[in-house]
Length: 300
Image (cartoon, rainbow, N blue to C red):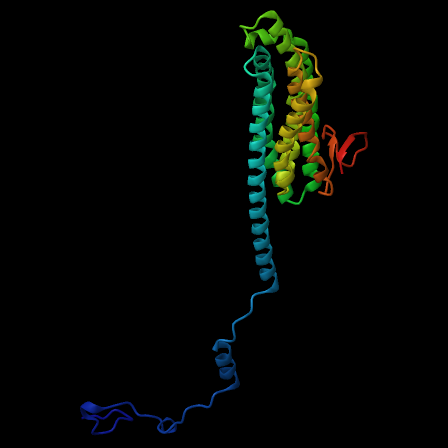
């Protein structure tokens, strides 16, 4: 039988390949510098401490939640006081006027401008202005936000001022439509009271604009006190003016109190808009902020 080169004669069934002489008694290789670096990199190090910015952001968020909780508590307290003052106002008015024709005339004369304000001003402010103003503040565009607010301030003054003038002129024709059962004397009283109180449509719309701006700045305390001031002014007018008015004209004290209280409700929050990064002006807002021209500044 012919033997293959390099193969022993008695290989048999247990033949294995020849092991080179230099690998028969080899020792493990010593670790190199590269292996040491790789082992060091795979060894977990000490836990990293959170950056200072993350800790500061957490503290700021906690402080913001605290301010929001405090504002909510104060708003609830002020709203409760306003409700109590409103109840006191109704009790005083009922004690002075009772169930009378003059009180019915006042109720109709007050409901007409209040309904117009709810239909026209509230929808525009809550549905369109406040979200846009808040979004601009979140983007850091405060000047642009105040420019939008000034434009709406101008449009409300122009539009609702014109509507007030039209109603004052057309009141004798409009009041019989909402008070068809009144006699001529009571109808005339209702017309006079409605003319006196219809400007609250404009005043309440502008007040809602200012309150919406302050709420966007997360300032709730003064807007929460405004309804309380409104009720207190009306109570003061009822108590102070009713005795000095002539007989039959006492109901005008109530109407004067409503008008005066609405003026106070508008003026009270205005100073808190100062220092907010912009100015609320009686300006159309159609011009560029850098362009010239005169405009009436409301607050800086």
